[in-house]
Image (tube, rainbow, N blue to C red; front, top):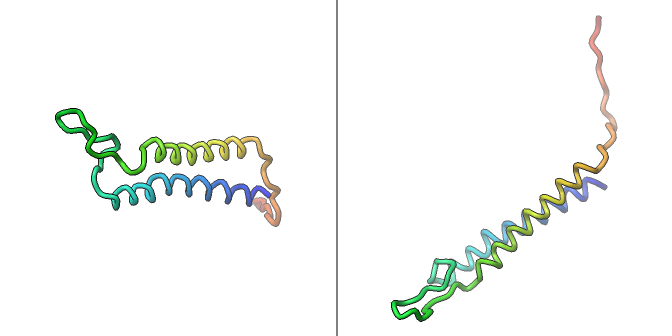
Length: 94
């Protein structure tokens, strides 16, 4: 049972962080200018360009991935250790 939870937690957290950093970063790059996470303004103060994906959304995906890792760590602290199935213990000879 814990093996399934381990794999699911690792996959979900890695997927969220990968999507927030790499995929949305690639989408932002392919969308073109601006490469800044804030709206660009001209001298008059008018907004001339805004990012395609808000930085709050990308940050939210990354923080969600980190939160999943934190919950997984808390789970591993309170979960019982698995039994030592099939492990033989050797003792030193005199």
